[in-house]
Length: 78
Image (tube, rainbow, N blue to C red; front, side):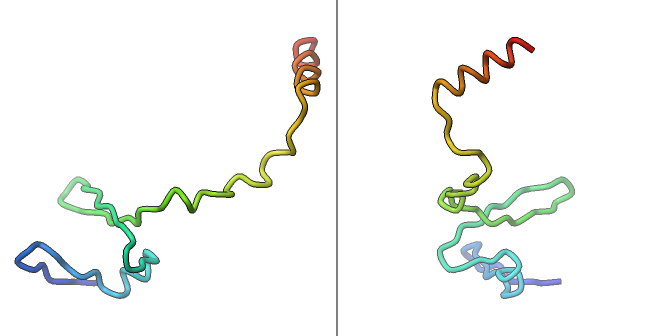
């Protein structure tokens, strides 16, 4: 179990093991989620930039308008 002290200003330092578990680096942002029973969950806030390319390779290559119309017509006839 990790512990840290709260300063007069309400600040604390996250222990090294906690920073490592969350893969935190200087400048990263964290979010506090308040749970029932007085518990708090600390989450790393992800940048939208890390989503770039997430779906690459998931979808097939683009199709032409004619190919879309053929697929729609084929589906409607089934």
